[in-house]
Image (cartoon, rainbow, N blue to C red; front, side, top):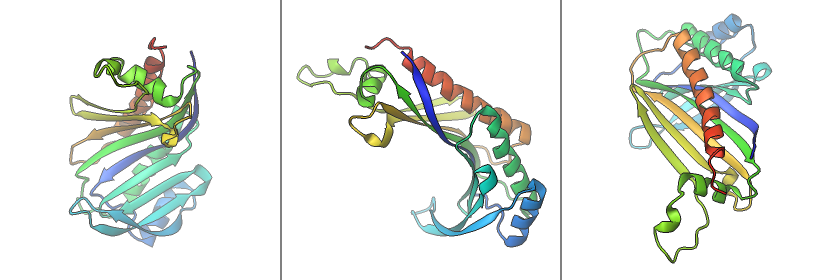
Length: 225
C-alpha cells in the first residue's frame, strides 16, 4: 500500500499566557525586521483558560509567506499555512523570534509552549478511512463483544517522553463516512515557563515534522487488510 500526503494544512508554535505584538508600533517593528508587510486583519475572541471567558485578541497576516499570528492575553499562535517541506519550519521560528524581540515583555514568559502540525493524507487500502484507522488502531476491537458488527474507528494517542508530551489525533477527514482521506493533528507540548531559544524551536519543529511522517509510514505499514 501507499499513502499520499495531500495537504499539510499548517504547522505552528503556541506560547500560552504570552501576548506578543500588542500594539501597532511593535507590529511595525516586527515587519521591518522580517522585511515583510504585516496586515492587521481585525479583532477576534479567544476562549480563556479560566472559566471559559472569552477575551479580545487580534489576527495578523503576512500574505506573502502564508503566515498568521493570533495574539491575545491567553496565548500567541504563530503559524505557517500549507508549508511545502520541512525547511518551511524556519519561517515559524523566524517570525516567533522577531515577534518576541519586538514586544516589550518586561520579563514576562509563557506559562508553557508547544508546537502543532495538521495534515491530510490519502491511503489506497481500498477501505474507507474509518475502517482503515480502526483496523490499525484497534485491531482487537471485534473481540470486545461477539454481537458487534465491526465498522471502524478513530483515535487519540497521548505519550509522555521526558519533558515532552505528545498528543496525536487521527480521524477521517471531516468525519465523512465514505472518505479515504485521514486527518492527522499532532501536538508537542512542554510545560515549562520560559521562552525557548531559536535553535530549540527549530529542533522541536523538525522533530514534530519527522515524527508525524514516521507515524504515517508505521501506521500504513501495518498488515490489517
